[in-house]
Image 1 (cartoon, one colour):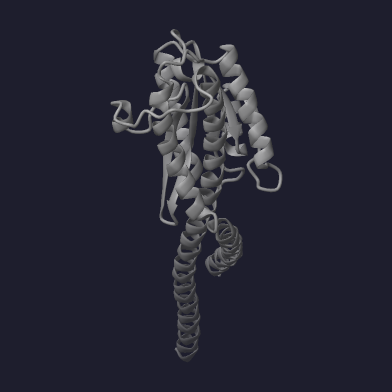
Image 2: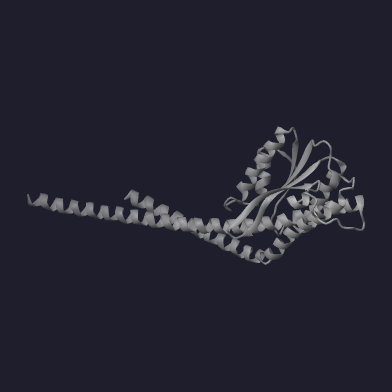
Length: 290
């Protein structure tokens, strides 16, 4: 009988867990549906930012501005990373943190130190456990972290780059392509580099711009940093809710399978107990006859 009670408790716990996973799936579905309206324009802007940069860069090659030329020696770089505030969202967080570990290892081999801006509590917790150099840390929740807050962080990072405190700026996060496809991407933002090989070979058109020279390079560097951060922010939010929705759907399905398995085991155990009781009754009756 204790075995039957244990199975009953497991079934009850799984049913409670299933309520939680279904609720989380529903919440993520609602949030994803709200954000999904942005997906088309977000994908368009994410692509066009790179194309515009490749179009402009050839005309800035003669500029001596740090946004274009960079620094002769690199001692310290800045990494902006996007994670979620909470877990239970598949590989959304783990893929980013795995890439952070790889990036840190590469920089360490070159003798380069790394300071980090963490947007998302999971990334912040990781940095504190590893005792990494944390420049800024903030939640990523839509209600507490806005585009205005992101613009302020972008301005601070750009000022540090122009002052030479940091010599490169990198960006790391998940890019949303569809509900079934999100990819972790690492980009160098500063100094400005071409997005594709064709632009790097100088095959982009050389255009006349106003203003030109260092003033234009400074403005382009600031805007590219700001708009890339904004693009990664919304891509990360989309990826988080999509990953959580899928993870909770799988968890709900798995609990259903386990509940079915334990119900079958419980029925077999109950049937075995009933059979044993019947055998005891029959045996007792036969013993009385003897």
